[in-house]
Image 1 (cartoon, rainbow, N blue to C red):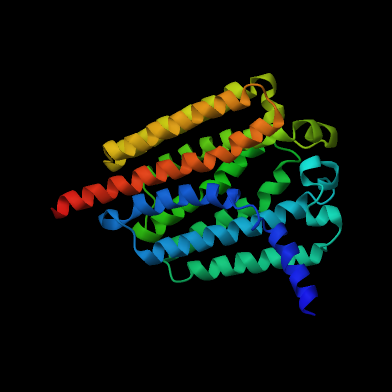
Image 2 (cartoon, helix red, strand yellow):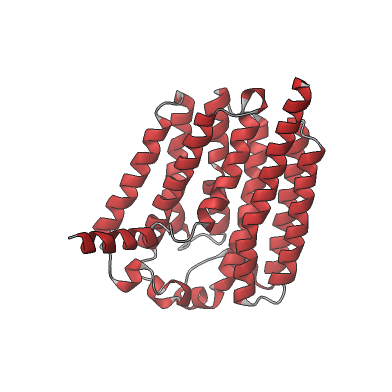
Length: 296
């Protein structure tokens, strides 16, 4: 009995990508940007940080399950995904859907203590997360749709803290959408040959020989809009230093993706975790420095 339970938990961990936290981190960083920028007095309540962190992890896990369900007939034909649970035949469709529903339900329970506007904002967030995996069948740029899904924690954070969603939230939303298109196109470059064979649409295929240019343009727009965010929020030199560090990391990615070699493109994708981290560190430290200065 315990051996069977251990096996099922291992399958569920793979299905929800708990063994590969990079996606959770890329979703968590912009959510935390939103939580900090939305905070009254410049510093968020611990409860807000906990709610949005746990909610991010749960919704990303649910989204991964739905993604594998949507791709269940394709993953066995792609080298990178041929060992996933559906491709190996170790999980049923019903089992996966029940798991996704359970994770989404737990995420909704986290939202219940918050205000009504946050409840309303959670509905499109769930719709985007659940429908994204199916957009790869018909959208030329499904990475843009993913950008919307990965950005919805931002307006939710403002709704929860301020009971409104100001322009600042939507500028941050746009910045993160461009960043998501950039790093997920790097990810799509890894599978381009397999995706062409099975008929999956991705931005790497749509951009074609302009893929590297498009990625760097999206990264540039991300940095510019994050600069606008800093100006609107009254952030200072520490935040700017974080953005400059992010720019250096992004230029390193350019050198990685320029040859279009799959392993290097995947390494560039993974490197975006550091981009999100340094931006978050700059934001948090800038706010902390300002509060310390005001207290002094």
